[in-house]
Image (cartoon, rainbow, N blue to C red; front, side):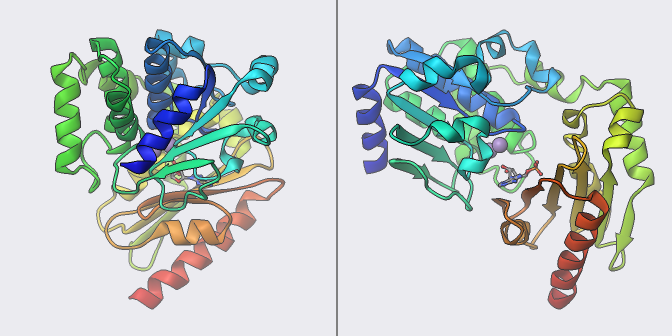
Length: 326
Ligand code: AMP
Ligand code: MN
Ligand code: MN
């Protein structure tokens, strides 16, 4: 594949490499950043993983996560690097302060979002892939990297989380093939599943109960939406990361086709998470509102906004689109 060769060439020509992913990092982002960083280290590169955001507490149980830095702590290294590899991020707005360092730098973008803006010198954007982690597995094989059990587990994590632990429609035979190979190399799914799915803080569950209480249903139960205001996070002693996964639970309700969760964190910053079950394309709506994502999982973010106003705008937009569709 030509683009893979271009990536290999750029990596070969570079020594100091920054590997980064998106803000509000998820399992795929963390897995991809770590798997590529470990691999590049194995082939003798000077690598620095950067994610310009707090890492959710569950993932901090991975010792390798300690190596990931925020942009402000490594300004000198960012200035001195020869190459920045940007993973799982559809636009420059998704990478935090690293955005300000992209000019005059060689950039590789590797991502599986349909909405990717291809802002790199080389862009490998494949919406055929379940996860960026799956693409990184392919890249690392092309780099000739040996997979030990630890790297296999870390790489498997991103494939697992972005397929909802092998449940979503993106769980293709290729996913099972890659997961099988990683498992053969010693990758373990259970410690990852336990770390992510069976690691709830009681405070988080109370916040979830409150989110459930505030649900509103429209269109005969086809559309559900709820809201978490900054005050709710404070009241239940929670942070933004504690709300991750809630919107998936809203979608999981019987009869629901589209679920929306409006989250304000911190005060005035509003993130909208959208999910759909079967046909409805939420990435189009998210893109129209300045965000992006996948057909069945997308989002958008607003600064200095009122969460209730945003909720009204999004609910109207989706209700209209859903009722036209019938
Ligand atoms: P979330 O609802 O935050 O879990 O995000 C769902 C999907 O939409 C993920 O694949 C994100 O990468 C993407 N996404 C979320 N927020 C944004 C945004 N502000 N801009 C672009 N893509 C986003
Ligand atoms: Mn992601
Ligand atoms: Mn992803």
